[in-house]
Image 1 (spheres, one colour):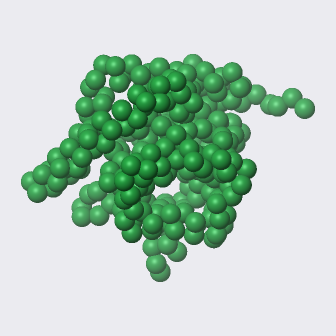
Image 2: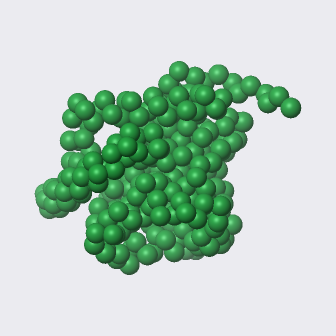
Image 3: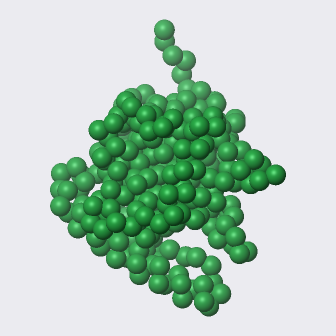
Length: 277
């Protein structure tokens, strides 16, 4: 049997975002391996799958990036419900909201009902980032600095591999050590949780800030599925409604799922109230 016909992992739902195809930092090989070895009823693409900002500056599109797109389209054709929610880097797709790319519908956001009845807002999250919304020039400048950090990260990890060490994200480490970046992440998480709370939802699932996280903020479950540039993470829903973050790392000469400190079971939240007819 091929790897496609016998997936290693089976989930009810999978969320991925911030792949940034079209950039040298995209871990397309890791994502392609992940997509081959997992299967789900529903797959949400939560924004920044393609990096239109970077492609406007210089064209970079290797075969592996094309393979990822083809794999996603193939999953949709074979029965997986694939939903695309554009982000700020692939905002050109927002003009096609309400239409479908192949068998993949494009939505501004979505409401996902889990197996346990809880409902989650699914949105990329850039609309709640003041820099992206109100100071686009600063966002573009930050994107350039981030790209340079990823270049340094690539050379750093090339050296680590030569020395026999596994992948470790230098750029993610630097980002989380900077006080302002930590404060920004905390503010972003609180803002996203507040949006879900005002809508009477159990939680919010987003991307955008490249920081995988799952924690209760008040009565709301905040989930960020991370990215496929630094952490190579996805959010998954088991068939009983449990949510979990999975990190896909290189180990033993091949990509493999690793259960580590990032993984957490769905925190306890108040039971969902029955809907009023």
